[in-house]
Length: 229
Ligand SMILES: [Zn+2]
Image (cartoon, rainbow, N blue to C red; front, side, top):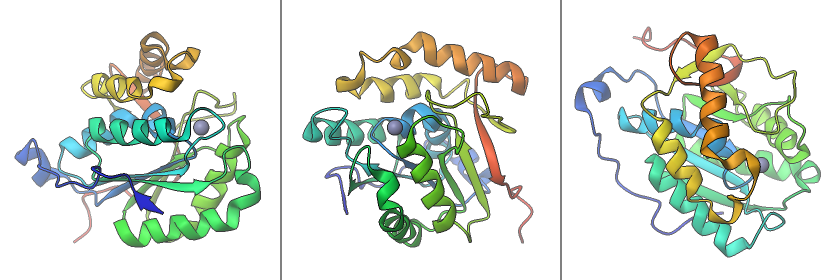
């Protein structure tokens, strides 16, 4: 368990008025593989970071099955830097075998929660065809049992049962998302990595949310921010 060199950095709020308005505490996003966070909630994380909210990422597997391990580590760090994440931790669990490692993943995610103190945790949905994604969803729900807000993002492998009820307006964050996805150079041949597909989905979810472009989430539970003393 180690941070990628160069991704631990000081966050400089880019918009002080927004930073003062930001009611949410740190945000922690957890994906099974490098690029899952960018695809599922990259624009949302970029907007949180730009608003002065600490955003962190955890990647459960370095993704050795989907490509060269060292290259994918570099890509994970590059994607996180583009989004403005304060840190990204790449764990050493085994690509395609995460279902057998759920207890160990649970312990590592608990440690990440202890380190980053999030009030919002975002991870995979249970409605996903990829068994690694479902394993991470299950481990994170247990690890985040005391976190007030837990949301599940939409992966390209989401099933038809994915039914979002929470949306973020990412009209301003979509370019950063596309740039971050572009950092995953070893994965760019995959059809779901194209700007067309990503904009198309964001437009569809935006129409549901009555905004321009949106990322969408299933809610495990949502605490409305801004009312705490
Ligand atoms: Zn994945």
